[in-house]
Structures are given as C-alpha cells and as structure tokens.
Image (tube, rainbow, N blue to C red; front, side):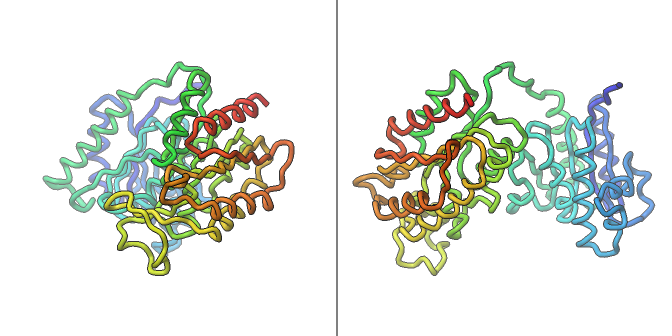
Length: 404
C-alpha cells in the first residue's frame, strides 16, 4: 500500500478567511512541503473550491452527519464542526503538522483537533485570542499560539508579516523536527512541585539508568499532560508522588486538575505509585485574590504572586475520600504511600504547615476508603516525603510492580 506524503494541514473558515488560507499555503509550498488546505466554514457558502478539503467533507465526519453542522445556529454549528474536524484529523495518516487560522470561533473549531494529535506533531494556531488565557485551547497538548495582532480578516501590512511568520515557523518545525530517541529505555512519568523537588530528584536519580524519567510540574496542566501520555500508551509507569492538584480542584485553587484525574491510570492499568505530595496546600495568586470565604485561614506567601493556604483536617479527609474512590477504580498494580512525617517541605516538624491532625485525618480516611487488595495497597511511612528513605521506598515499590 502506498504511504501518503506527509503534509502540512492548514485549516480555517474559507468563507471569511479564504485569502489568508491561500497566502499561507503558497508560502508553505514554496519551502518544498506539500499542503492540504481544509475549509471549516459552518455555512454552505460555495467557498469550498478554495480548499483541498471541503467543509461538507469534514462535516460528514460528525456522528450525526453533516446536518448537525449546517444547522443554522452559529454556536451549535461551531461546536459540531469542532467534533467533526477532530474526527477528520484522527482519520488521516499523513499529518506532518497542523496550522490553524482563526478568530474566537475558528480557534474553538481547530484546537480540539490539535489536542488530539500526538505530542511532538507541530501545531500552530494563529489567533485573535492568543494574547489572553489560552489554557482551554491548549489543554494538555503542545500547541503553539501566535497572536494575530490585527483581526484575521483580510491581508494588510501587519497580517502579511504575522501570517508569513506562521507559514515559515510551521515549515521549519517540519524540516527541523527532532528524530525520535534511539534510547530504548521505557518512559515513566513523575509529578513534582517546588516543595517536593528533593523527593523527585532522588527518585529520578535512582531510576534514570533503567527508565527515561519524564517529570511533570503539578500545576493542573502538568497532571493532565502526564495522563494524556498515559492514555496514548507513551508511558510505561507513573510515580505520581505530587497530587497537589486535587487540593486546588476541591478548594478553589488556581492549579487545579479536572474531575478525570487518575482516570487514565484506571483505564490503562499502568503500574502506579502515588503519594500525598503538597496535599497540605491550596494555591492562589496574590493574597488579594483569595476568596473571601477563606478569610482567617493560615497562609504562606511563596512569592509576591503566589499565596499558599494550609489545608485543614476536614479538607484532608475530603481529599482522602476523593482520591480513595479514584484508587478503588484502578484494577492494575497500585501502591499509594503516606509519609507520616509530612507531605511537603513546608509540612515538616518545625515548618509553617506542620499539622499532624491534618495528616492523620488524611491517612485515616484513606485507609477507611480504599478497598485494599493484593494489587491495590496503601503503605504508611514515618518519614517526610522529601527524606531519602521515602524516595528509596517509592522506587522499590515501583520496581516491584513494574516487573508484574
């Protein structure tokens, strides 16, 4: 069977951005790369001839058919076309890169498909939305956002420069792609926060001869990125020793995971060693951003823009119940370690967040919640999470279950 030539896919709504599509596609092709242009217009406008792939062709990929896209309601049509385009992209085996051009609607249309591509496939979104909060567009993927400066609504002295940069950036990413490593060591994920750095550094040093250690910053997006790689089959195991994103999810913090945290572990049954890293704190921005309902709580100013709030015994019990129920859904090899000497550098004897009552509330509730089996086990330790003993124990358990 003939393998298609890898192509740079360029997507936009040609009913409003046809000239921009042609301009960018010509520049990419001038570098010697093949392009496939895709129309994502949500109206049957007759502009399909501007693109290699018509809007009708893409819309037909929607589970409910093209009529779900061409419904006459702009909001519903954009949502439906986003679903259709994601499925369309997933059906292709020749995507060398994906370049999108759009305003708010186009960005919402194109980025879900970008998120579905594997990490490492170049993805560039030229967008009017790129100067604000782009977290919803990027998700846990490696999407690059380029602010369009002027609206993506015609060619002018500014848009030509920006679009030319986009064309050459995506071409450069394809031409100068880094080859896959020949290192045959299996990859594993580890989660880290500033206050659990000694733990993860020690664990990585103990494992790096056997495994390619990928460390993820537990900032909400970090945990999502790790689990995306787990779901994609790109990680052979996880040392999820810093689960602090759960604090922020349950108690209004700014570095929150989503409700699906831990689900990839359950679905794939990948070997998993977890722990309580930084469950002693909820993350907020400047002290003025802390919700009023938390007035009077214990705070620690990490820096001028980061305020940490100590979790209470009641909150620790709630987190333990939430995590415990997630662990109960895991049928693979699971070990969850509870460091009795504290969950972070701040939660240690003599440190500002040391609170044995909160720690014990978590440990006791987790033991009541988790249904322990030969594969799903809790391990209580007397040391702090950053003590060498803890990292050594976590590594020992991981090596044991990774061999199953």
